[in-house]
Length: 298
Image (cartoon, rainbow, N blue to C red; front, side, top):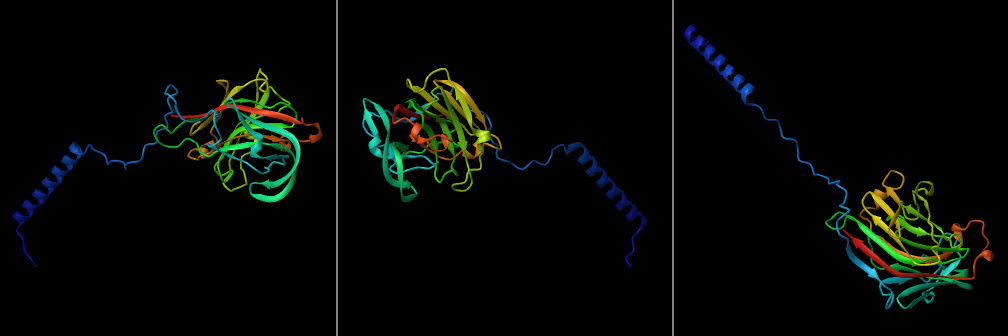
């Protein structure tokens, strides 16, 4: 066994106690810092500046041709009774006219089904080749889509100015305006979204908004407008707000952010928009006219 003198042991004890005291005091007096938190990415939820200038990124004035558009040649959906064909689209003096007429014709059921079907009307439908919609990035957070339109008059006419992406409704659909030709001082807006092709999970009870205005929209041109952001959709008529959709769990507006959509102009006839109405009560002809379409972003 190793032997140690009493004095040596006493010295070691005093030395160890002193060292412990010094360390303890140092810890109490100097350790004022905290462990840094892990860095996390900051999400900027600041609303876009309403005073920031809009930048025009796309426009159509219908002065020359329809090169920026795809024209449908088929039937459609929603139990509608019109057949779309390019010959119903006429350009004259900077105005696009969509001519709707009662005519019996056989053609493809819809773009995805070539099965022959008999239709009772002919009409026109165009879709922009360019896709639009807000996304993350400088100057991309807000989109403004607008058109100057004179709506068709008469029972059975279903004009629309809207946007959607393929495959529907996984990229969303925004109905800026849908109108009935026999209700010339009213129109509606709507939203559709779904996670699987062909199956919307939105509910019209939560998304359809009816607008009543103090002018006849079939008598003259008016401006219809959508302002689309990450968390809202604003519907405007002649520069005045009619409705502001704020994102929530039932309208899925937040899911539309980052999705690109095409612009659509068309006039359908009948269908689900005119329940319990006989085509025999519909007008024989009507016209929808479009002066211009513009898209801005900021």
